[in-house]
Length: 113
Length: 115
Image (tube, rainbow over all chains, first blue to last red; front, top):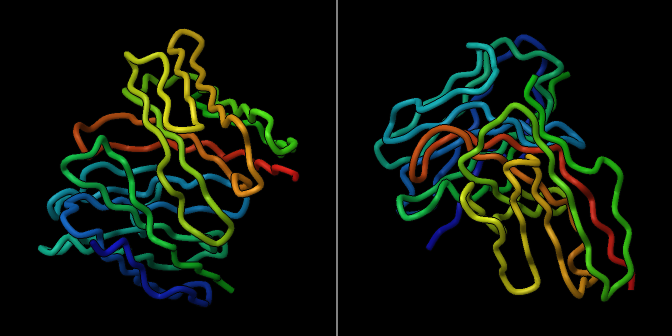
């Protein structure tokens, strides 16, 4: 069983640029959630995808968008990057047999200069 | 306003003692609550889930309680070991069903177990 993987591991961008982060869910999991974690804080829910449809969104502006593919992998896109977008971005998947138990990837560390 | 709060100060205890971590929330009606462990530079790892109609759950040295009247969960690690040193996150489950729904995380409490 393959765990959740994310790419890239680290990324440095400048303000105003766009970024795409990628996530492969754990085998058999059809739900992917994305979180933003600032230093010293808990993860903040960005949105969730279930069977390729957005299934709930947190308090993030529309410049945060996502996709889920037929194989349940997912992308997080952030446009017009701001300095405050610097954070660890976590992807988590959950399977049909679970009670929303999240399996997290290692995260992508995004730095916006 | 809606809030979820964990002890902001780090918890330092001696090996072998019981660590107790607190999670309080206001203006949420969670269907369940989860606890995760997070090590530096890594993603959180699921530990335990407790549903709104359950008072207590145990798993090996871990115990979690859930009081929906007090709006509080307590997480206990008995016979603590230095390897238990990490940040522990509580998360409220709201909305959704089955394996979907939103998780609202607290800011985490850092536990340091000294030998």
